[in-house]
Amino acid sequence: MEKSKIKEIIEMILKDFIPISMVNNDGFKNFVKSISPVYNLPNQDQIREEMEKNYRDAKKIIQKKLNDVKYVGITIDVWESRREIGYITVSAHFIQGDKLYSYVLATRERSWIINPENIGNVIKKVIKEWNITSKVVGVMTKKEIEEAVTNYTSFKHIPCIAYYFDTFINEHMNNDLLRKCREHIIGIKNTATKNIQSIQFELHKIITYIESNDSYIWRDKVLMVEQLLKLKEPLNIFYEKHPDMLNFRLSEEDWKQLEKFQSFKSVELFYKNLFDDEKETFSSMLIIMKNFKQVLDNYKNSNNNYRHQYSTLMDTVNKLYKVMETNTIVQCSNILDPRYKTEGFTTKENKDKTRNQFSKSEFLLDAEKELDEYLKLGNKAPSIDPLKFWSDNKTAFPELYDLSLKYLCFPKTCILFEIILSKYGRLRNNNRKPLPPSDVDHILFLNSYELMNDPMF
Image (cartoon, rainbow, N blue to C red; front, side, top):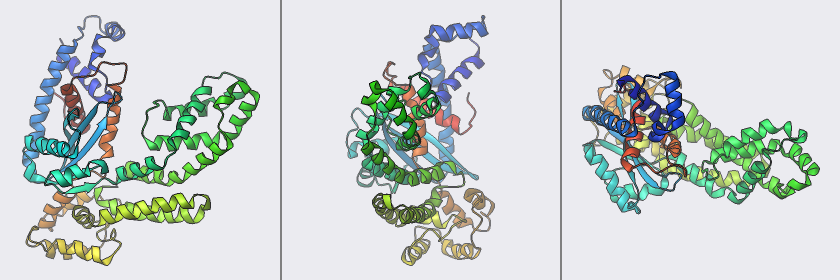
């Protein structure tokens, strides 16, 4: 067996979340044979054996990195595969040089992890297994497992703002109407008449947002509705000429309800900024929320039809902002971001409280003095990388540099790792035999290792 080839097969499995059983498929075997008739394709056991070795080797490398750092941030996600099998994934984040590293530490099946105490115990156990308990700065989670961290571990909790917005949007969406929209689109997508051909392409784009009827990603729902509203007039013309399709038709009241979904567009734009703008970091969360509040004010004042929805959303933002602004880790990360410093705070009280954090005994002796000098420098340009700034200025501000390693070691949201987990549905859909829990653990672990551009073995 050629070592390099099995390595490439494993990298393909990890990168594209292809099931290991692919190597047993006749079609894949024939494809490989057509390219290289002399190559002996490895079987599942050989793939799994090599992957196990890669897992052990990668684990040693990550463990050494964790041993070498002083501070570690943790993110937790509780999720379900498309087969409704529950999992909990624990990920670690830390700074080396001027780079933030993120790795999945472990993924555990939730067959018995059914309450906050059990989840808390799993979190503690995984962290202990990696020998980083004393290094953990805090744990970022979605709202639904906040209790597990605050009541059943000794770690400080950090709310993930993306999950808070997810919860709000999903609670206010008319899912019955969305299901009707799916039926509406799927019912006509294959119609091959001249009347519908002009919008077939647009319908195909909408289908990409609803390929899975159990999709829970609200951004896809908003995009689906946005595209559908653009097709209201040609679709109504189509139905008038095709009475046999009237059972799929949306009523005028349905269309009015769909128009209300436009109030969620502001949140979708907020998410786009959060995920797509690389300069945004965990330390800029208060600034992002502050700017978002201004966007909501503008929307509310210029869109009377959606005033109620925007007011309700603004109440949610204000509550979350208050939680974030009074969280010690969020406070310190914001002030240690050279682009914003104290700009993220809405009250002088919270600004002063954060400054006072640097004079407490838990911080280094000269941190308060260094903070005064640092604040006098003025704010840096938005394009500046906070981690590079502190790496370049660690001699001038040695104690603040140490604190930057502590308070900037978090990703901006847990959902970046959920993107990995959502792809995992490809591995466990209803048409495939479930993988053993160890395979799930190893594949997600090695996938995160490869995302850091670490060399595969």
